[in-house]
Amino acid sequence: MGFDHLILEDVNWQDELLVPPTAGDVKAPEDFGNEAWDYLQGINQRRGVSTPWKNFDFRFKDGTFNIFMGMSGSGKSQITQQIALHATRDGAATKPQKVLIWSAEMPTPAVVSTFCKLAGGVKSPSREYFDKILAYLGDRIWVYQRQHRVTLEELIGISLFAQRELGVTMVIIDSMMKVHSKANAANLNLVQQDMADQLAITARDTGLIFLMVAHARKGESERSRVDKFSLKGSGGITDMASTLFAVNRNIEKSEIQKGMIGKRSDEQVQEVLDQPDCFLECLKNREGGNMPSISLHFNEVGQFVEKKNEIKRIQEIDNV
Image 1 (tube, rainbow, N blue to C red):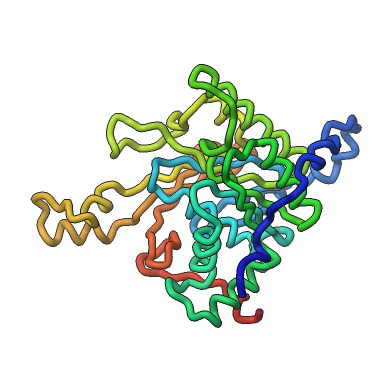
Image 2: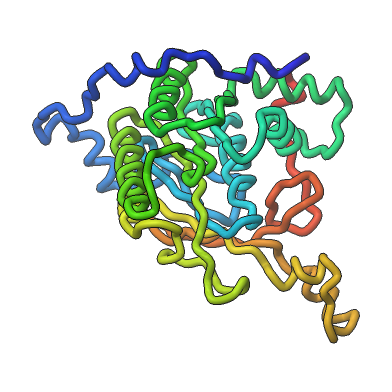
């Protein structure tokens, strides 16, 4: 079985942009009575899409624009894919989720391969098991494979198409720096801020959940912690986001894994190797509620897990 059934291409996304939004319609307060009551009762905090980790108490709400920021190699792309894949599982969300991903960082076969490893919990699955994973992904994950000079308007158009025709509820944009624009160095920050504003508005108008990967600017050293002021580009980008997450890599552990042991004893080396590989932290939550953080280990499959050498797999695949 190939993975052509996961790919979106040759879509007339321009026509999708011609449909006017409805979120701006004037309504009376009583029209939102039930939703407002749910907010008062805290019910809204228990709705949305959960995360793959038991000790990371957070839910992604409909109509939100969420940014995952980190240095190159920190694992932010992998984490967003793992979150999106988890969202498609039975019971992971208030309503069933379907995901569209656009990645300018990896070719489509690599994206699909990553999803298969994350879903199956196997680094090298048999062909039979691989085909079962693809069958599971078939109605849950979609990949937009055009990469060259893709504009934000195109990404919004393809997202609207995927929502209307395929029932997509969550969109991954990987990454913001790869979205094509005619901006030069002088106005790049303003253009990126406008991009973030458009994504936030689209999320609000459609109910889509956007997960966007963004790069952090270099700190004073490689060991500098990524914080809410580290986002590369204008600070206005952060202002537009519903939530902002930082992915910080354990630099010391990474160095030792590369053989940079220095004067450490064997015991000291092992102590560092037992530490987590990265730290995921919520730095902003406009919706209110939790701003959790968690330490995660990177396993051989490519999953970020809470316990060293833990392997996760989607049990629903067995029933395909």
